[in-house]
Length: 110
Image 1 (cartoon, rainbow, N blue to C red):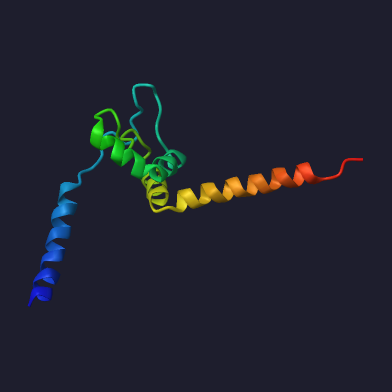
Image 2: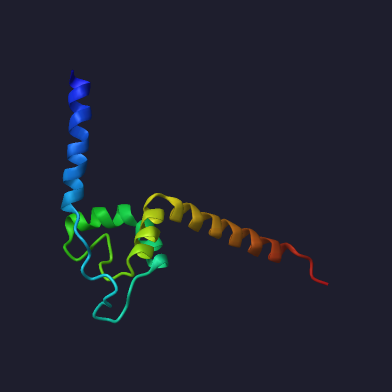
């Protein structure tokens, strides 16, 4: 009985949470400095989502999402970054560059 109640309540809770989300009216409108955040900014912001969230709890000057963005591409980058893909990509790029630099320095010079 309890499981049936939870299963019937879950879709209602999901629909309620979706109804709270509204459209971003500042999409494709540059910030006061004239910048729009795109895919790479979204990937960067998403990869630091945890730190930004904790900081936003203590300061009104920190936000976890750039409202002046390009729309879908920023959202896609943010989603990838927040899911950990951005962090793993960044780590692999660092490892690759470290390996490349180490191989360059270990080559014998004649």
